[in-house]
Amino acid sequence: MLVDKGYIIELDYYRNHIRVKLVLEKGILQSIMFQYETLRNDEWKPVIRYDCAHGQPFHRDVIWPNGNKEKEFVDIQILEEAAVYAKQDLENKWQWYLDRYLSRIRR
Image (cartoon, rainbow, N blue to C red; front, side, top):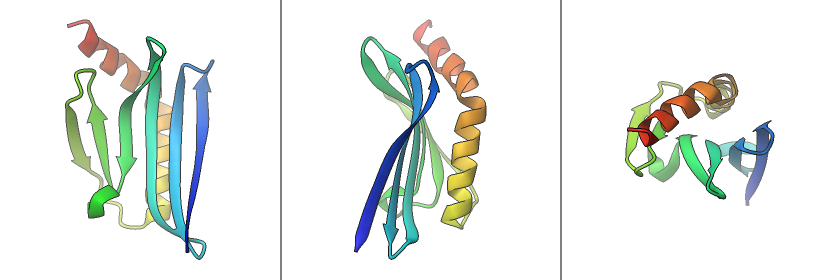
């Protein structure tokens, strides 16, 4: 039986957060998704997403304001390690990712 667990990690004053979705089967991690989102014009906008969806290997999607995405594969095979990597990267670099995202809006 698959169990979906989802939660939010707040980063600052409710304008930036990480949305987390984990899928477990018998307590074993089957799928992960960590997505950094920023609140713009009363709407949550995805900026960076780590996942292994659609049978693809673990990867990072960079999502630009115009909706374009850049996929970057991350060579981590063990999902538990991938989850730690994604969480730490987003918690440590969210401001940098936000600045880069906003620079694309100003062009």
